[in-house]
Length: 134
Ligand SMILES: NC(=O)c1ccc[n+]([C@@H]2O[C@H](COP(=O)([O-])OP(=O)(O)OC[C@H]3O[C@@H](n4cnc5c(N)ncnc54)[C@H](O)[C@@H]3O)[C@@H](O)[C@H]2O)c1
Image: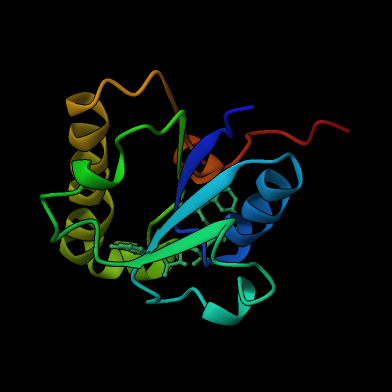
């Protein structure tokens, strides 16, 4: 039976590496795209190279990403700088890393007609709740 192939950007990070664990358990082969700015190789060291291929690159700088996307069934996009206060202090840095990075990933996915693209956003974009739900 043909294996399901997934890409996890930010797969060496906190959420991404847990997602990679789950996908491998479900029988996926996974390509992790990460520049290790906050992610760690040790988060993935328990996986064999057969199941998890690691590609080290910066998604905001590399415009030739589509070569990794051929034959891929699912793209899970988690790569990004996640801190809120630093992003307010230095919005340009976060714009380049997160917005441009996401655009490059979307363009690559579009080029090879990826059908399933899952974007892991932050709930922070909705702001704080106005009243307590209790
Ligand atoms: N942790 C949370 O509570 C939470 C909740 C909701 C959403 N999120 C979102 O989920 C995503 C992952 O969060 P996390 O807590 O796992 O963060 P994390 O910092 O542990 O993981 C982010 C990963 O992205 C990689 N990365 C960052 N910029 C990159 C770039 N330009 N190119 C390639 N790789 C890059 C980092 O090296 C890291 O491995 C973020 O977008 C975050 O906003 C997090």
